[in-house]
Length: 390
Image (cartoon, rainbow, N blue to C red; front, top):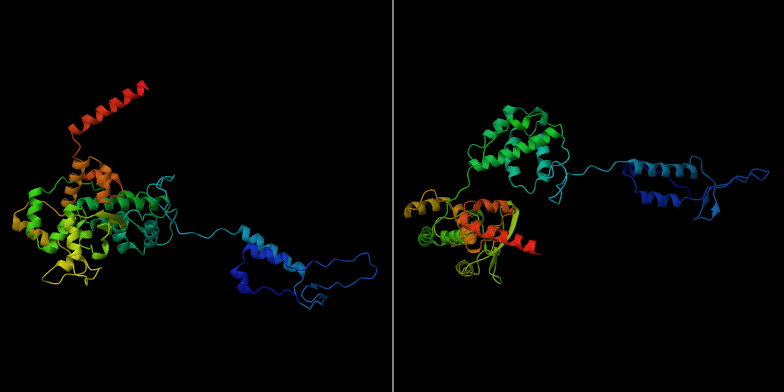
């Protein structure tokens, strides 16, 4: 039986080089021409299955034509280019190239929305990228990058007016980097990144809660707000993360909390005796996925994502506590207390759950004083003397 011609579907679909090579090996041998015989002999294709010489039907493909097709397809497989891959940022933070620190994809095509999606794929480690580029996508996502103007960029930046100065400064840096990347790959007008307004970051806050303020707040708070303040002032958990802590985050064996916080960072922290007693004292029939502040709340129903800012401001006004004190300042208070107790920046970083130790250093920028530098200088001098003697 002669080998049939491959269908168009099979030709478009393509076969691997291994299958084509195996197919080439299974082809019957080329019939030889017996030129030494005076009378020409008709040699028919050999069919292994039948074991006999069969007649070649009219129009059936010969061995030579099938062999040429297989070799041609093998050659085309070698010449074909690899499929385009979705750009991913490098797994290593120490990569080479001009864009290593920003994790930029190699290229982008199409609309601004598609370019932003590819850029975000390479910027997964930066949670501010998506928020910073949201206004640009909402206003001009369907346009191409080359259609951007300075007026459009400045209009997008003006939508950040309701945010704090620190947030606006961070967003402006993210937007400027994205536009600079579009310039480099030729998808935006030259110099468009300079249209982003430069917003300087404010001075780092140095406000902390005193022991008297913290104790008065805990004493006057109801059970739900007290548990919330304990998570913020004892463990240094961010207030939005503290409001979502549920029974499922608590490990009764190790008496610790396991949760996911800002930037999709997984964190495990030991708890104090009061926090453990509060969680273990909840009814056994309680929903393990419901926030604990909602389980402890009495009165008006609370949503699944409770916000306690209003109750925080009302409690401060009732007790006469400084208006400048914020909930996040309780987290800074924990950082400074750990630093004063250990003088170890790594332990402060582990408690706060920061990825970068530079972020932790901002919480303690005013803590390193002259009396802290004198012992360090003495240790450095002693180390150099010991090296000379060695």
